[in-house]
Length: 376
Image (cartoon, rainbow, N blue to C red; front, top):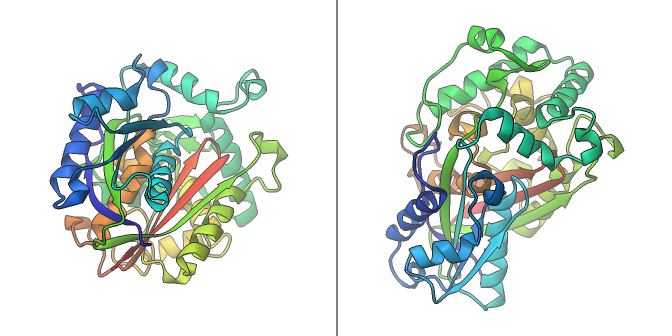
């Protein structure tokens, strides 16, 4: 049995005055309004949100959203898997449809993060790391900074070369009306922005955003099939891993997704990958098997990962420019690939893609979730 995406919807990612419930409702209504037939009447709802209890004080989000959508009679669930909550919720919906228990299924993810100040939200995100590390002052930017130093040393990547990534991200975000940042930046902007955790500067880091995204999963054939799923995991402690310049969980997830889809990295036409920090675009593309280790920066410099390149990466602007409301991110990535495969991406449209990949990370590489989509 094939599993398909019937429709997608998304709010703008930004600093919003709306409540989390309202943002999720908006995304869900947008997704359902694009659909005709039985897929417009979901039999179950799967909601993803990382930590609304602490961020906004909201709880029981699945029931709250179902009731607000007039769907209080259907089954409603919430999935949490750190910043990989969105893609994990999507995969749960796929399992429901494959089992025949619920079909179709509405998946909605969201987060409202800007109600807390930067220090408070950074402290909350740091809880994704072990308490022993936090007691030593470790934060998520600090962990990524250590990986960045290791990668730069291992593959002779310069700070100037690293700056190319946020510049590209903002170029693409400027084409996306739903992106948090819709203005271009220069190399000078990146290099003169404040240091967050050396060598990472402000423009190397994704913004704190509010927003929501939704998809409808069904067994009824549509224009886009969910061809492959993959999940990988790794140790919670960074120092316990086999490598400090890579995420083995991503490689594992990609391997499973390629096998299920009966495809290889060479078949992929467009990618949305989890670039919460600039270095991760390089690391992720290599872990996904799209480029050889250390060669992603050469692909970027040659234009291969740009909008008109041989393998466009993050045409949405990625987490860096599009934004990163964590519970929505994985679903928003899938929405972008769906729009690319159906020719609905507007000014950021890739030329004739047929295979797309979405890659979402939970924690610091502890969980990796990969989804392969195929135009049919």
